[in-house]
Image 1 (tube, rainbow, N blue to C red):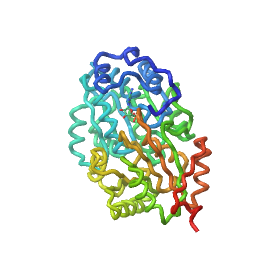
Image 2 (cartoon, rainbow, N blue to C red):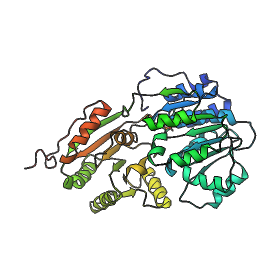
Image 3 (cartoon, protein in one colour):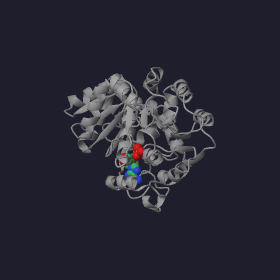
Image 4 (cartoon, helix red, strand yellow):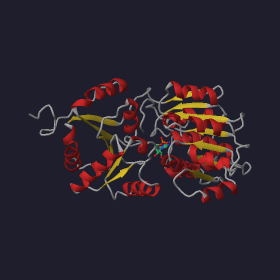
Length: 386
Ligand code: AMP
């Protein structure tokens, strides 16, 4: 588990008073006990309370809001009664998969609605009626305008990764969507961070929310081993190839600051005979899906991504996250590291630090409250180069 603040085992799922079909779905998934965020959030959400969950990806937050929705909706009328909003298409698809997993023995329909794919199948599915809609804000607005879906009977609204939705400029879209949802509803807001903008959003949309939180504010996932490699900018690509080869790195997610940088790193790795692929917003949805599939299937070892593209990626078993460029925002460091060290796994996070990035690394260390060890590789460390 990515959080060790609750080292004592939580009571099993069967103690939460869940229905038999949900317990069976959880058993099928091999889950016995709730994670800390689930143990806190599920009982409150089942009571109908509004919730503000401060939790990163990897904590089990998706099931924390999905399970109460399934419990509430099972056996009810076939109308759209729950809406889950996510910032990215990738997260949208993953949340839809989670709903399917946990609702597999319940009679519930779910659909994901996001941009970059044909409009018509979504339109048909929405018009046929569906219990749970998982959507990115932009595409959902298109459907609302065409009245493909109405939210008159909506009971539960989830804002997943609210901080990132605001970062991506979705505030106006959120307003337009929420305006179409009944005031008497349950609202669950999840966010990895709680800047004032998110608090303001919560004040606007939530009613007397309970705050549930796992881990420390801004604490990076605790199963991750961090390291900083001092290296001149123009030697980063050779260091990357060296580490992947020598360290026998398995499943590597590399972050660059720009799309152009991501493409360049992929070219360098391929020149070195290492299979790699890029993941950023210039690539089509088809290319992105193919890249994730190949990565999950182990066909490619290295995925090179920009921050926008990585958010919410649910890929189990990432062994290494490499910050090819030091993130300019300390929060991005925490998000990136959240990709590894996910439930029940551990991983390493390497950061390549050029001389002009020393200050940014210090800021990150300050925010995460820990000093990251420096690893010096002879021939690469600028401190040892003449
Ligand atoms: P999330 O934070 O929702 O992205 O979930 C992180 C990972 O934890 C996912 O791969 C889930 O399949 C897994 N997971 C969720 N709940 C549990 C649980 N109670 N026990 C073990 N693994 C879980």
